[in-house]
Image (cartoon, rainbow, N blue to C red; front, side, top):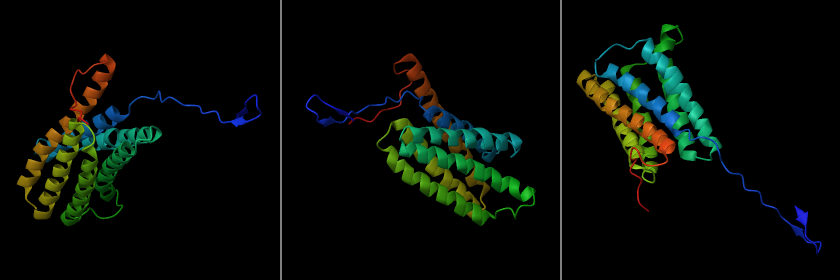
Length: 203
């Protein structure tokens, strides 16, 4: 606040420019790489071991939570909700595998996992609706992730391993789409032009 020559009080407005980095590529890459590796397992390529669990804790989990907090700083509600939630999804998924082995409760039943995955699919579907105002690459990530969760849920609900294997291949595509979206944002920013298109909606 300050006074002018006539003694009237004037309000001074200071605009602060956001110079922080875009956290989306970090979150997308953490999600994408971990999703590809887990779904190589779901497709039957290899077992569920500490390689996947380690990625789930650190890159899929912690890195996405960090990206979500960074998006909160940018006043991005969608990014905060998505990255923080999916980061904690990975941490909870690892906990469901590790906690029973540590004697901390029983392993979840197939029915329980079906409910768990279904609800994550429902959450992802609602978030997908939000992506309709964003670019095509992000729309594809969320649409394919919704399908992935529901296929995995169906596989557990029915006990049909073929459905889980199909989900694995679909999940590999989903994961690579997130990797593409991350790399595109990094390269487009570095080069100051569209190196990899994201499909920005018109209007």
